[in-house]
Image (cartoon, rainbow, N blue to C red; front, top):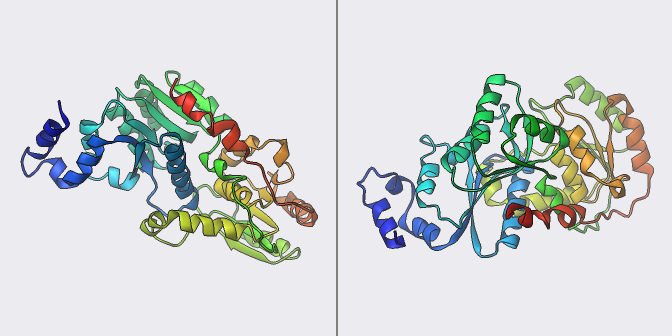
Length: 354
């Protein structure tokens, strides 16, 4: 079928056609005339870690597939009206188009909208290779885990990237039919790419306030009090108090402002996975505290020996102050290598295309 015939078939099926409801003709023609790299499951919220993943995914695709148009779809829009946009893309997708599923914490029953969207993509595109970018995998509910097992294992060409060894071990057990690889979070590709000449002072405490938080309020208050004896403490989080729309529209600008802010401190203490990575993008030493799952305890294992002076994982809250004092008083050159991009992501295209 020619492109012209496809357009006619899609647009002239009556006023209730989903094509008329969800797309304009220029958008559809753009999809049909270009090679497309579809990225499904992007965030539409103000979590800077998730937004940074979108930024890095788009950046990586544009560099490695320069002839492709990158089409990013957020989870909230895809889920509207029983995934009708996704079903439409199923009708117009071409043989040489690429499908990526957004990285993060989407292979889990903790965030079901993201998990449902991921499952829907896998079900709707059984004849397309699908790359699920680096995931933390965790299921609390056996019923949801079983649903995921059935859906993912039934896809004949699914590459599932796991961003920590615990997730990889889980995937080996429950997803035996998928191609699995262990790969670091894509935001690590930015480590070693930024240079800052900031005057450094104080301690930044980047802590979460959600279902993954392990630190209780009274423990946080005590930690702030103890850290204040070393230097001035400022508290922040990687979830910002702006709309997802505002963040998405100004993604690069906001992220660069965050990284510059992180470069102004002598040391950062965090229980955020991307708080850890953001610290290293800013070339700032970081003390990493545990959260309720394995994301941080496993995630810090990615950092090689050359990062030992910059990354300190402390699983006992009573030891944090001692470690902060040592790091605070140590002299640093505040420079880190572009290790992850060179070692891992420069090879990813060849892995995908095997």
